[in-house]
Image 1 (cartoon, rainbow, N blue to C red):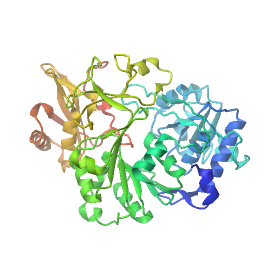
Image 2: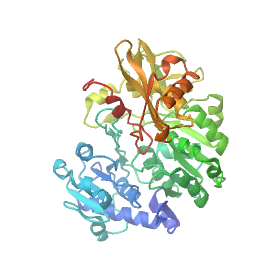
Image 3: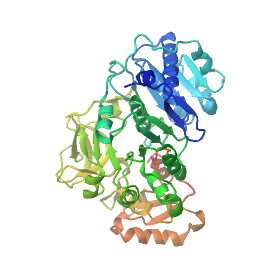
Image 4: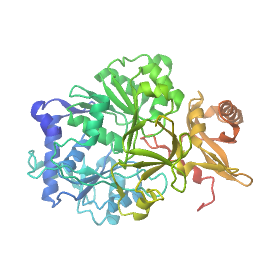
Length: 511
């Protein structure tokens, strides 16, 4: 149930295979590397409950750093490798990290925060050195490869992506339980997806994101081999499934869309018969996209809805989804409530804010106001991730949109996700964002910004075609009145769209 136990039985089994380089980290190497770093943490004075942070690309030793902190009883914050100086400095300082680990590839931004992060006592760099950073390799080399005496479980403390305002650090309660204690995520994954030591798990997303990090570590607890993509490429993902006999994988809807838009001869070129379970989450999947994925891959597509906050977990398997198309599932952890703005519960099919009760508690580190705003208005302790949705009569949840992205046009609520779902499957659209812009008469009007498959197609002709296409499937008030074109939309590698960055271009400053 942890790398040391797996290494004792299968020391030479691959724990990590890097997709581009083919570099392999065995379970023995993962265990010994994480043990050495755990000893270094203790030598630096860190004790259970203290905090470290690391910013790495999808690096062969990424998970060794995470396991070192986890087996030391520490809080650990994995940070996006795409952040700029101010964003990075804020997170490292806010989480009160005493140790900060980065890599030579990210040295420029890593070294730029030194003056703004005075709480950091030790800075280590993989693959090289830089001003203010010691060599990671030299620092760990002198420490034992055996476990520290006081091993206990730590926890990740991850930050929301900050699509609206500053990122929020989600601080869980630290259990400090024995390292081999199974947690709820392990039990959920075993129950839903039936992995084993023979499983091969493909991770196509950045490891610093909550789902890839937690699922990769959980699959390693079971002795499974991970295949980690340095960056997502749709055809390479298919080739990796065939090459390594991948059995389990996790995706976001934008990855599905990119794979589906590969030419038919490319899509059928690869043998995907080993794939027993394709999991997706992070954003609602357009119904036509999921229908096509199930048609292509078979009834192996599983979906869940949860957040970094861990306050609830919903799940839907392929059979139930085909009977309730568009749902993100029913709760396996927590109870779902749909409430109006005053906190009153709404009946089935009525849209409102999605709240969870009877799930794990969380706080946003160092931000009482953000913690308070995540609770229900009537003081029942229910918590929300900020999503809008509705329940059907059988208790299946359907997400409408983020509360912060709802458009109010002429007094009518418009949920841009509906138009995005329609436009995303148009053959000339590579990516799309829909949001509200100022309108003197209506308050807001619906705007679409589209990344076409080729900028040669951009122009009034495609704009009219997309508006007509949307109106053929949705009520006109839900559809964009205008379309702008961009070479690329600001999308995070995890699939999350930075819609706020686009929206702000159309609104007066401070609105």
